[in-house]
Image (tube, rainbow, N blue to C red):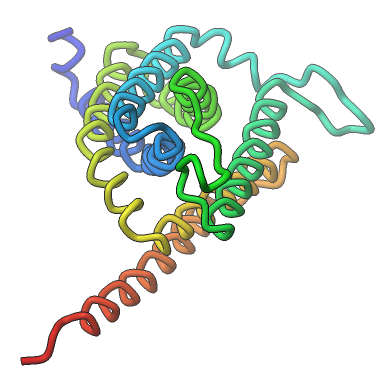
Length: 241
């Protein structure tokens, strides 16, 4: 391990991969916070922790199966020159799941359900939430793992980057979840982000690549507008002397 870290190239790979994992982990935190909100209050924190542990396990499992990951991009079926790979299928299913899940959550928010017994919105079970987080994390981290494999030949470096990113996610999960629950408009914006990510995954599965910079700009612009809205609402609520 010390011999690996003695190389400047490996340090550069470690730093780049760590930053990449943290940035791409933001959507995981949002998805995790929204899913865990469907649990009873006394199980939400446990659900977020178990979800992050499941996400860590799935990412490390993907890294450990490098040879299998590489084969996912190879076409298994070709229809009139259009190649379909397992990666395309996984991205398509993951994108459809994100859009469907986010649409249902938006419907519940618009209908005014708060998740209690009288709202008509059913509480989710702990194992269902954790399994959904683990499954969608595979889709989220698939391209990240492929990028990591291309940037480094050392499993230790890739694993350390993943561990660091999950550590940041554990630290950020609670405040992000509390903030999203406290501000309904932010939750609606987060659900819209997930729909946007789902559309991006489907487009990628159909070999129509949407540059990530476009998505990040749209997200950053929307966050900026919502921040101004929150600031304006806060100013209006300040009592005049």
